[in-house]
Amino acid sequence: MHDPLLIGGREIKNRLFLGTGKFSSNRLIPKVVEASGAQVVTVALRRVDLDFEEENVATYVPGDCVLMPNTSGARNAREAVRIARLARAAGCGNWVKVEVISDNRYLLPDNYETLKATEILAAEGFVVLPYMSPDLMVAKAMVEAGAAAVMPLGSPIGSNRGLRTKELVRILIEEIPLPVIVDAGIGRPSEAAEAMEMGAAAVLVNTAIATAADPVAMGRAFGMAVAAGRTAHLSGLGEVRLCAEASSPLTGFLRSDE
Amino acid sequence: MLVLLNGRESDLPEGMTVADLIAQKNLRPGTLLVELNGELVKQDAWPDIVLKEEDRLEILRFVGGG
Image 1: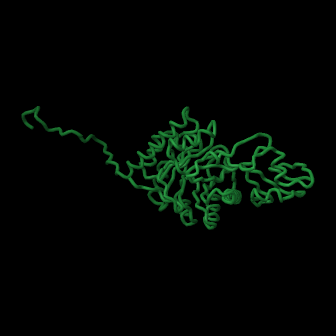
Image 2: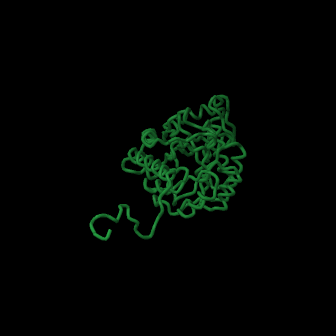
């Protein structure tokens, strides 16, 4: 089935976006990319620890993937814009996941600063995917600001608690004329499938894959779940009913009055 | 010469270039981004840039993130 997701002029065939944090070894990343089929892969930018030898994770991301730097660490729009510009100048392409967080306990996004950064970066030609709390009015403002998609959270980052914001995400999917990508909190393949069944354009998964006992196999499971959920969405789910409706004919030959 | 290196005041020898510093810290150049006073500096310019008192230097790299 030809059903690409169009973002920033790119045709994305695989609707599982992969985060690269928390893997026990960077060497797992290309294996998970292959097993899951993910084409969009996020990375973060950090200061080098001058006392320890470290690796650059970007070298582990296969070259045909879209590298999507995030602006994690930014506490306001100005810092997010700075990170995005640096990443682009470093040859990372023009996609950016805007992530502005000033809350340390729940890591909830600051929608107001995220919106400001989105507006600035979109005007500079970035393909901007803002990570946000699923607020309809802010999502509408993101559309006006030039976002390429919106990325509401399912539950707090790294919590594996699933689609706790389901009703609000459903409203965004219905009302926002941009791809809605559920980011953060998805803990199981079934939750990824559920988001896709609802009409999410994609899901971004990191912790659930990276911290699984077998991340490569879990990557494959998420890839299958996302594809299944997408196919189910396109197929039109059957009606939900309160009472039973027989699947087999109830009339037959066992009673004389039938 | 005092330079603000990754947010910390560091005393570096006079005349040191960005490339010298990277070599002295045993960092692999291909994996790094260098920002000097708020501007990205490309790797081919590192040998030509002599650090000055009060420069703000950030040495960054891509790490795993979601």
